[in-house]
Every structure is written in structure tokens, then in C-alpha cells.
Length: 372
Image 1 (cartoon, rainbow, N blue to C red):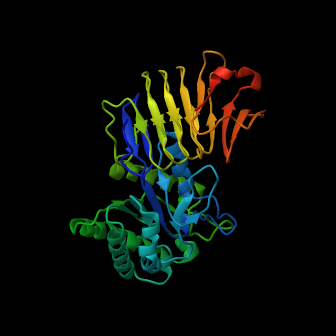
Image 2 (cartoon, rainbow, N blue to C red):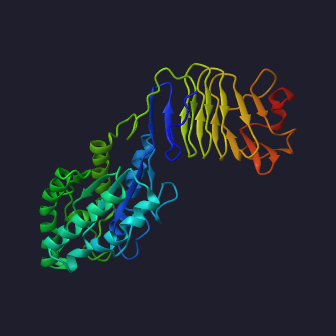
Image 3 (cartoon, rainbow, N blue to C red):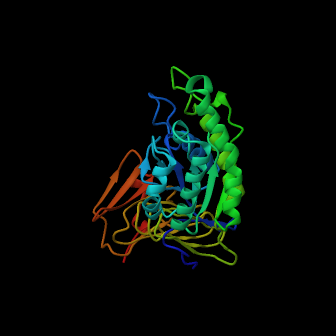
């Protein structure tokens, strides 16, 4: 069995395709634009983070967004470090604690819009240099992706502030090139394709924050940056795993996605809320601790449960004589067997249970239960 190479990164591994990777921890870092503010009455949409997360999820790509803040829709990983009203200096002052808690593999940094009301472009660049150096010292293994900031509408926020944003953006590529030449793992993300049509206007906002179309545009540019700097493609992202010659897989302490092939595989989730899919063959599926989603696939499979494994769901259990088997290694028997709207719920005590989706109690026979 392939042992988990890490206990602090989730694993995605698919024996059928041969693709696997460690799920990267990515920190969206910045101000209210990272937070996702559109206007005074539209602050909680998640902004670009929602568009980016949904695009990645739709492609089957797993990432772990990290940060001490959380907002946005429930269907995305909405952790981030977008601090409303914060300047570059404030981000710099908090950088050590921010990074220590999040342990990111990549940082998506967009900052400076708030500074345009008080600072010159040259001061902003000096402050950003300090922030990037601080981040690189606190997160020595992370790549820091630094974007230009969106345009500011001059007729609404003033010519000076708009010009400051433009001048800051013009200076940014040289700063990133300088820091990269000095050995810092940093890359420039060009968002100059954003225009004033991407910015909210009255009555929604005062010409400072992107509108939803603008946030979608920003998400597309961040997606391209992940392709360019983290190797994002249809098979994964970040650090890849070599699955050659493996028949069995063991996951990490986090939420893994493990999938087998046509052979009889052993898939063990270990910890976390895992998704395990045996596909073909007569597989052994071991969810481990955490509330897991288990799929046997086309074979006749063995599902193994131990004390403390939580509440698991089997999506395709084949009941009846000669069918699949539920093996309970630390239980003398089940406590209750109840039909629900979702299927049959088998409770085992101590908070452990198994939901057999889509089944009725009458589908199950003694053959399907093994207690050892």
C-alpha cells in the first residue's frame, strides 16, 4: 500500500488515470477586493474567490483555500485573508501571524487600492517590497503571486487617485522582477485587461470595487496564474504524486479523494472527510476516521469500519446474499437499523453510523454484516 507522504496536505489520487497530487493550500490575501465587496449593500458574495473556486471544482480540481477570514456562499471553500480597509502596511504588520496560521503553498496577493487615497506610487511600491519580503521569510516554501490592482474610476474617485493606481501598476513589474532576481519565489500577475467597465458605479458603489463581471474577469486571470505558476491542468495542480506500480492507496489525515481501477484495490482514507471510489474489481474500502463518502464501483466489495470512524455514506452498496459485506471490527452488532428518506441508517454506538444510500431494510440480509 502507498502510504500517505504527508499528514498536512490532503491527497488526490486516481489509479485508473495514474494522476495524483497533494492538495495545495492557497491564501487569497488583500483588502476588500479579496473579501469580495461589490458595494455597500453587496459585501458577501465572495467576489473573485467564488468564481475561481467554482471553476476549479467544476473541473474536478481540489485546492484548500486558507486564511483567518471566511465569507461567501456555502458551496465553496470560503477561507481567505481579505481584510476590508487594510493598507499594504497593515498587511505587512500582520504577515507573520497570518502565514504561521495558514501555512500556504501559494499566496495570491492583490493589495494597494486603499493606499491610493494617502500614498504616492513610490511609497506604495516600497511598502509592497517590504510586505513581499516579509511573506517570503514567513512562508519560505510558498510562491507569492502578486497582481496589479483594478482601475479606479477618475470621475467618481478623483483624477489623482486614479492616476496613482495606474502609476503603481506601471511600477509593479519591475519590483517583482527585482525581487525574483534576488531569489524570492515571486511572480507578477498582470491584470491590466481590467477596465472601468469591470468596476461598480453608483448607486451600487463609488467607482472603487469590481462588479460581478469584474470579479469573474479577475478569477480568470488568477486561474491563468495558477496554470503558469502551480502547473494547474486538467489532471491536477501543484506537487504531483507518482502512482506507477501501485495497486493500493492510503490517504492522509485530511479530506482525500482516492479512486481505484479495474483491479481489486485497497483504499484506506485514514483521517478526514474522504471520498473513496473503488471503481472496478473486488475492492476493500476503509474510510477511517471522519465522515466519508464511499463508492465500491462495479465489483463486489468489502467495506471495513472501526470504532470512532464517524458517519459514513455508501452510495452504491450491493445488498443481498452474495452481495457486498459491511465488516465492523470493533462492534459486536449494530444498535439500530432504520429506514430514512436517504436510505438505511445503521447505527453502531459512540456516534458511529453507516448510511446505505437508496436501500430499504428489506434489501439487507445477514450475509451483508460481519462483526469481528
